[in-house]
Length: 424
Ligand code: S3P
Image (tube, rainbow, N blue to C red):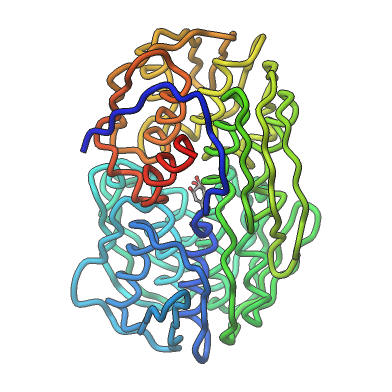
């Protein structure tokens, strides 16, 4: 599906931001691992989350949607799957299930779509093999992944990639292992699993630079209300910052500090963003108001990258409208996301007549630049599609976003909402 978009003179309203993708995956999986029936309110209904639900159902877990609630019947014993577990486009589903299935001592084959088949999995297989599980990967790194069940034991492991998916896979394997697991190194990625595990009765100690996870744990069902996804909200925050006269209010958005990198960078650029925290347990949540403002280029520090990794395509298009230089380094992980996002950002900015210097691990953009409408190839990557749809709102002329349906991976209602906001 091709979506045509034009420059917009306005952006106004209160977009309803769908549920946080990371919390939705974790809610389903923690519910499935717990004794009793868990309830998740406002679970994100997107293709990625459906991939997790589909795999869990294949493993014998009952998941039922009733209005805004999703009920999950947790089970200690899961069924050995009789078919391959299809994780679709979802790296979180595949990587986290590698750890969970190892913990359950189940054997299974995990597959996915063409994009997922190109994504590295050794980063999960290595630590969990050290715990006693056995994996077979394509060319020792890629799906399909075969997991073979075996009893696990705790490990001391120093992480070298700041990945919450890898961290979560290890934590959820560790809770079923014999003995304690200690994690150190790059553990500063989003911390939803650390926050949610105790909510389901689990034990995890978070010390400076270290996580300690007890083995042989039992989890107990609970209820979670999923806040709006800050990575999704970021598209509207970015758009409202640069479209003259724009004003938007975003309600009930997740404000977990490990997810606020893009909001902080936009504020440093001069964006007029105000927010208030309205509740804190088990995750901070609140409302955000954004009005347009002149922006300046900024340096995005390598240490900030884990807190804004998903928002970098959006921040790149916003940087084209800021005065001065925006630089990011230390973002090489972008090359192994749903597409090579560094490359996709550069190709599309240049197609729109903009300039960008690309590095192996980041980019530099000097603004402000006049962009013109273009044919945007999304590489079937939802965040590239949405970032360049926002660029289309301030580019001269018409843009065409190819394969725009890929936004359904995280935000099925994106184009309907965009239509409402520009018409308001
Ligand atoms: C996610 C972690 C991040 C992020 C992805 C969701 C998660 O990936 O890019 O969209 O839910 O844990 P990495 O863990 O690979 O950085």
